[in-house]
Image (cartoon, rainbow, N blue to C red; front, side, top):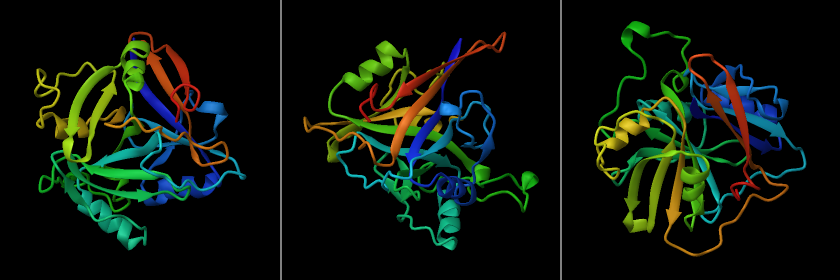
Length: 272
């Protein structure tokens, strides 16, 4: 049996506006899937068979999210082959986006927000200067979306100030720790979990920088934990605030194709 992160559901004040943003601005497309939580009508994702998807549950009374660095839920991460190409498209669309920059030895990245105020990180699969063409010349198509043609919905990022989230990943969910990335100048460490059996480029050193661009190009979802060197209480999403509500996990038998679907409550199970 193989497991994967399948879908992240958000509570938002205006689902059509969010769906339109992720389709027209970020190049996602509608997907089919039996794992759609709460019978959501729309699943959005990129063109990867085992890739993660998003869905949106409309709650007109909820407010736009105003994120802080003390929120337990942080962001989603989308990795791309050519970040400058993606940002150029966003700027042409008038979408506010931060200036791309190489963040230490983590990656070349930038940030923006969706209509519900939720944070999105765009992360280049190679470090600054190691960009690729968004599409191969042989596959060029005027109809291809400038971001959608090169993107992976790669990360769900949460914050933690204790070891409970890591214990949940490893002991409860049986996930594999793929990478450990200390960020000493900012007093936190990043941990990346999934169920992959792939061999890392530097398999005997989870802190190896060489593993990071390889990891950013994986076509499946990872749970990213920002472990903060602090004992300060983290803030869970308010009852009437835009934010994550459910994560679905698919367990599939490769031989028969049979699937088992588990739903994780973001607030009750993860404190998000």
